[in-house]
Image (cartoon, one colour):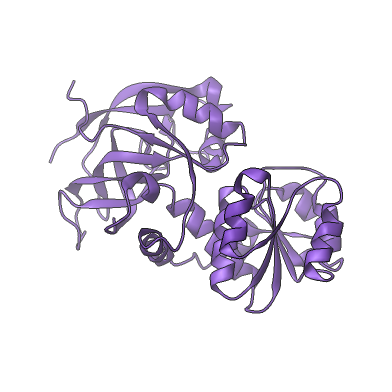
Length: 324
């Protein structure tokens, strides 16, 4: 095995993604123990990528972005069993221990799963972070069969996934969403109402009163949690947010990351493979709003940072990395 030259998108200082990210060439090393290296076929963009640029989980620089990756195994690290060079996999890139992330021609994965038949690389690269976040947040909330859950912001991908996960577990789901994805959410079985003025009254009409729990999933939107708490019977702890952290802590609502850290038990990554199998059978889906060649990564970034892509954005590097 040997290091491989690769294009990568990374940053050398923290700041807004559009200001600090740039395309460079670097050497992607051999995978370490417990890792594999892949030729990247697809990388799904997430809001977490931009938070890393802004300083979340700060570490040594330079750093790359792109957590969710699908591709073909190029090299296997020590102690790795069950996967071989040439296998098609998807999983999570190591963006903390390397000078490159998944948004590159070649990437190191710290967690991976076989790509199931019937699922292409682009759709596989939409899954890992969204599925894990949706599943473990619902688990931490204690959502139970037969309860009524409000998913606020179900047009975002974590909310979109959470609706499907909750419905699969026998939960009655009310979702707030814009018109672009409302039809799909209703097709799954959710009761859907738009955002905006009168939303609490519309939710109550659908629920027949207060809801049992609320999952708040939009990008940071100050001022929304107070009315969600009222919808949850006035009990702040029945509202969990993935984005409005400061406001939640001030009002007594809960933050999903706080729940994870308090439990000390990280969720089983096996749920990613489970939902990939469901996706391959057409029983779970995340919409792709757009795919971009590697050369258009900046356009993809800008669409994602805008906060309103109406689906996942996926960058598609070529399978063969450049050699010079």
